[in-house]
Image (cartoon, rainbow, N blue to C red; front, side):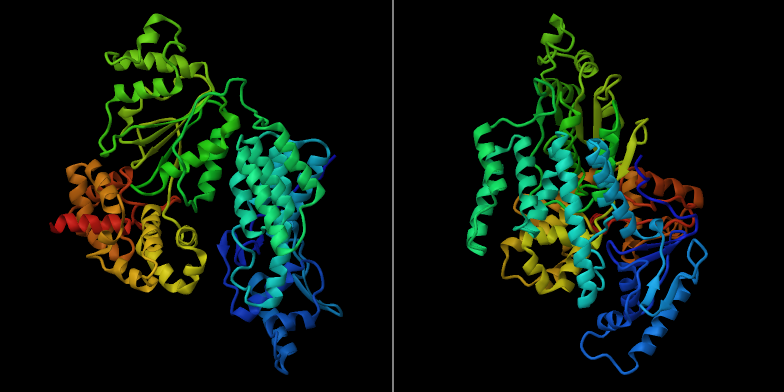
Length: 614
């Protein structure tokens, strides 16, 4: 009988995190951990939980070059201060930090420290794999990986001692990722691991186990040429860097793939359904939690519906396509994207959208089986006849339909499955409150780190490091809007001579920011203008007035009422109408209307102010 993977601490217990920046929380409230040297001491104690850490080790971490004569006394002060911050006793009532002949020891329970939870889940996953429970192993190992919030102790790694501890944690993570990827590949779900394996191979090019897993995942996904190219790149790298050949096991894997040709294990049906998805973006970053949410909901059962909402340029379509590609094993009868707007951003006729869906999925003549069905995709077909054909096809399939850029609820009512195992993923600027029941995911702006990651993929990490402060100014001037960050990266990739600081200055100028966000035929202003046209005339007037508050970073209901020169009820209705339309953001958690801080995305605010002034 296997042991439970994690023992959760009692309510109100301390939670420590090393898998990302060093943090400590009580009841979800983050505890300030004091000055840097104090945090270095706490990080070192937590990196070796329930184990005495010698004073000399702590001294080397805090003062690597020239420790002061008062180092031991200073350490006592830092430990005492840390004890006061995190509490004198642990969940078991014993002293939290103790000092003995072996050094300082920090007592922490398994459910209180993310590295201990990570280790417990990883062990449970490996035990499940040894028992032959591959689905359970994959689930537990994925739970372990999901605890990671970024490079461990990334705020303290300029200390060599902490960097060494962080390196050990990263090595453990790599091993668990390899375990997870191999379990998914064995289950026939290689697509979920391909992108992560590629990213890790780029960072650890000589790690053979990662390479082998990446080759297997590509090959199982039907991408044999790419799988063989991975081996060839590795062989050349080994010869160039180490003067060695790949191991016999790696070579045998390569020869086996050559012998099997394009054959790969496929978990889908005997005759795979249509896959009509656009190419994903060249660079993708952020939305990891939202992607996991999407995969969990759509992959967790039959007949699911999800609405992904966000302003124009928020990355909704890219996220939807990424999720659809990763869900190949769950939808063997097809994954098809249908655009509900035309190229100019105007809504398409519902009959045209239905006709395209019927055509792309091959539903005409097969779903209903009669002569009317065979003629349903003709030019004279009515929307009702097309809807009947479409619904008959959906009822007998397990497919994922992505309805992209939906303007309103009426545009998709005939397209949503009425029964059966098909699922639908809707992307929309507004939240489409009239659609129910659906699972809703509202895309936030990219966090600074995510936006910098996206910018770095476009201009190169080296250039990003030349002026990190200017790079941060650029992504913040973009308001965390993925399209704006992507356009900035495309411009800077061409204008190699342009200093990042100079481009940041241009974006900081409210009068010229939108003019700078153009790369070829991709224009942020044009995309925002399309969203502006979706708004009712009254909403546009309200947004233009609220946009005057954008420089302050947000506004309360009282400030909105003052700006609109109206009463409280009218202000609430006006603001909530813009929230429904995706033009104003509100807090994710529950909070009263008066206490909430609302925001107009920066670039939308600049556009609205420009329209109001014009």
